[in-house]
Length: 190
Image 1 (cartoon, rainbow, N blue to C red):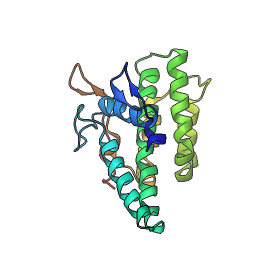
Image 2 (cartoon, helix red, strand yellow):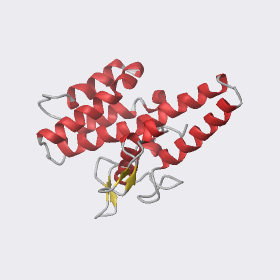
Image 3 (cartoon, rainbow, N blue to C red):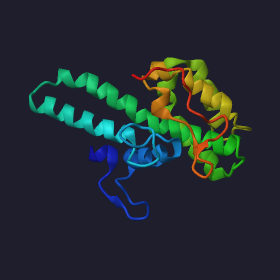
Image 4 (tube, rainbow, N blue to C red):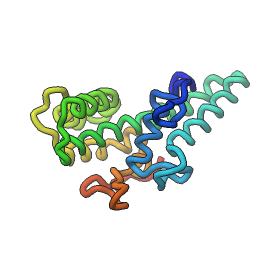
């Protein structure tokens, strides 16, 4: 778990760990998927709550010598760990493509998030992975946020993540989702 979450307290952020744990905490607030129910901006990332349970369950099985029993747990861990990466890509697609915050730093962050999750999307749909890549890559001439969002959403079932797990980009000032960044409703929970 330390490899996933890091082992240091973030003094500037107040978030324990670094790496994917801290990213999930940050994106949970941005996408309104915090709390045990995953419908809040407070209470810690729901994905982190679920991962902790899976880590503990896997550890119990390993201590009992049931290596084979950990395979479905490991698969679900990988699925859940993709959620903050999807959210990061969507976040920067919105910042660059809709809000016109198209600084080199924002474009680079979007490209890195996209690159981290593209292999998973590619196993589901080469065409949708290409849409995400062409809009988020370094040197992309433009970013079509709606195309990126739709490409991800078409693959949620294949990725074994649900719309409710990914959420939508939350506007904390207006207390609603940003227009065209709402959570989708098509995929059932996994």
